[in-house]
Image (cartoon, rainbow, N blue to C red):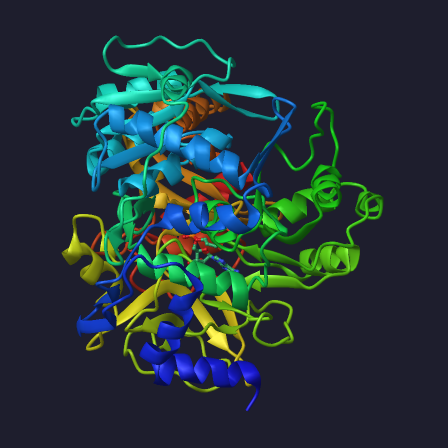
Length: 636
Ligand code: PRX
């Protein structure tokens, strides 16, 4: 048996012994009393009775051995700034922010919503929450007021941490007005707002509620804030993600299990070593940013590089398709993490840019978040000359489900496949409607995970255990299994291939979006009667959203000019409410949408028509003319 096969088998057959061993990768204040409690499926409690703290493991425990080594390197090609913090400096900064949050009344179990650009203060704020045992809810800075308001209402934060503005491609995006509008819309009102002022956009401060971070941090310059010891099963954070309904779900994560899962993955999967530099190009607003910008690398004692800016912009804000490689050279990055879309963007640049820098420090590039197509994988693999490691996972899992564990054993990758199940994950392929297990090679079904789920996996949906069970665990008749909502197959060697979502989630440039949320934003427009949003294949972004709208009054889009105007209004409405990311690439007008006789929208058929594929079985369609109209609207 290969080394990894044996490692995997132990994790499945003797999970308690396996994970007790992994638990030694982190510091505990009190050791766990019970490794695994799976007595109330599908809920799992890992390391109960053990007390620990994420911030202690990410920062404090490294002070003795590497206090003066870099911990956080923050680069912004938007503002042309480059700042580096040693573990000692990070420790001081985090305590200052922690003391500021305490002054604003934050304590264990309180929620702190973080709506920030990729600046070091965002990482300080996350770590400060972890230090205090407060639950952080980071909302991606690209989201707009409507999205933010619904998350404020769900998380009911005591404090919001934000900034004056973000910046993208030299374009300043003021956050403060979006935040003010979100708080105006939400029913829950945070008691205080803590604001980093980057001097990018003016801020109107609300007396008594808004506080400037710089002033509070200055006041608490010498703060000593000890870590609050939390039970392993205490909540560390929630992060919102999209699903089938328009209402985002708060994915809730524990403390001890998450710390152990990250420490283990840094060793066995990413093979990152203390004292080295890790560079993930993601954003703290996504799960990759939580696990592999902030917590994972720091827990492993690595310096983490935080990057604000486009992949094609230099420090002087001039176009530079080689900026990431320049940073790899300068900071001797050993492990890098990005998304296929970013690589496709770089692929449009001069290939010579890859050869211009000394990339000899780099051992591997990890790519995740969306399917990795073969031409992209080949291009970057040849250019970098290091293994390109596709890894498949979800916000819900917190760390890779399928990949190869090169830290355990060098394992061959196959183009098009993220790899094999990671230790702790019992991954199966089930028949969509019968729930029967498909164990033959290349049989297509739904990818599911059997419980107990490993450490780091979501505990539940924030405040809604029932939704957790009903949404994720009850989709297959007669079986309590976790559905990933992805189609997949497994080949004769046990490698999995992911074939797209089974639900209404789309993936735009590696960002997960719910088509229902976009539909809701569009139906709010006064001139819209009905709408269907589908994801359509796109060469650069993987998928883009496409909207088909039935106007209330046909005259509203009866000629090219009125249609163009209405399309613009609808796009703006989505961008204003949800953010530019969710804006449909195109809006087309039709007089009816294809539905079944019972009134269910035939989204898959619409999507197939958009991608020029066979729409499949249409026996249930009410009005075949509606699908014909979709086809015609595309060529219009
Ligand atoms: O559909 C799968 C796709 O992204 C979804 C999860 O997105 P998110 O919650 O944003 O988490 C991203 C964490 C990396 C999955 O259900 N997906 C993610 N990685 C891959 C992928 N599809 C194909 N290949 C991948 N490597």
